[in-house]
Amino acid sequence: SQQGEEDPQALSIQEGENATMNCSYKTSINNLQWYRQNSGRGLVHLILIRSNEREKHSGRLRVTLDTSKKSSSLLITASRAADTASYFCASYNQGGKLIFGQGTELSVKP
Amino acid sequence: GAGVSQSPSNKVTEKGKDVELRCDPISGHTALYWYRQSLGQGLEFLIYFQGNSAPDKSGLPSDRFSAERTGGSVSTLTIQRTQQEDSAVYLCASSPRTGLSYEQYFGPGTRLTVT
Image (cartoon, rainbow over all chains, first blue to last red; front, side, top):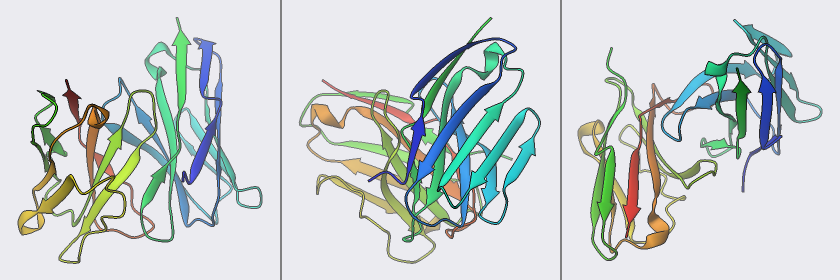
């Protein structure tokens, strides 16, 4: 079973707009991570937020975490065409395995 | 430094043949993971290795799948008697260790097509 579930499954926006992707998870976590994937190949780690953090920033990325709702969001501000990719949230289950959600496919149109 | 590498990048094989996929993790990383990703889907955990401990094979879909890691470094994922449903991108990742606090570094993947 998936530890993380993202929504929306697909998101299409214009360049310059903000993109928000949400992730829900099932069990308690130590941290939650977001990854980006281009063209169905290797994933790149974007940001990690710990369970005792509520918000974290990295450049144009802003991640929030609400452990009471078991949810996280990834906000990309001032989006660019190059941000077009699939975005996955992931968290470790109790067995130490990093479990990924199904991902949000983001399309940023110039 | 060098990242995680995988070979081959693409593999086309006939149904029933065996295939071997290779992963070279980042030097010094003790944890190594294999995932499978079908078209348009999320990542499916297959197996992970941590140092000299017994691997966690709980994600392997059938006994046709096996993996080994030699010398705590290079890993090979073997699929015997391939089936069409095995077609997917196989991703390898490494991290400094297992545990609940580490990001994983992914290779570019091997795209396997079984005809």
